[in-house]
Image (cartoon, rainbow, N blue to C red):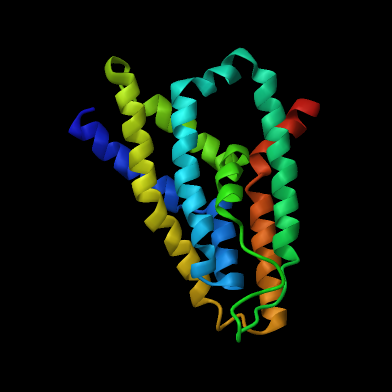
Length: 206
């Protein structure tokens, strides 16, 4: 991998990891509702889980969707259902308890966050783009490993910022009504992130 390609990969990993998406919306909500430390497993699950996803797709799993496009359709449908359920959970999260730092509920675990990457539409877009644009055919396996490593290194500090945004809002959202409005807004943004998939199904049905 050339220096120019590596720099381009670093830029893509940073921008795609930092821009709003389902992962970052959920981390923002988790920072508000649970605080930074309880959200650490969620953040690690995203970084390591997405790195593992990159490895699996780069080393062959992605070819299954080329041979069996119906499987990808089923995966997208499952992602819509699962993310709608997550949006409902976020919208109905309990109020912040300032004394304990906990809410009526619990943050996403490491394994839940890692598994979520496989039904996250933005993660699939990032993954397929990275594998097609930043791997080198002459040294394919090594370049897949480099892509996965770069994303894991860059992902954690970038997603941490979204959790810190949420923590910074805890004081402002200590009022139960305010946190309720915030959680509903986060849920709606999560649902909005599904619009490209929903629109595709609508066009297909028409």
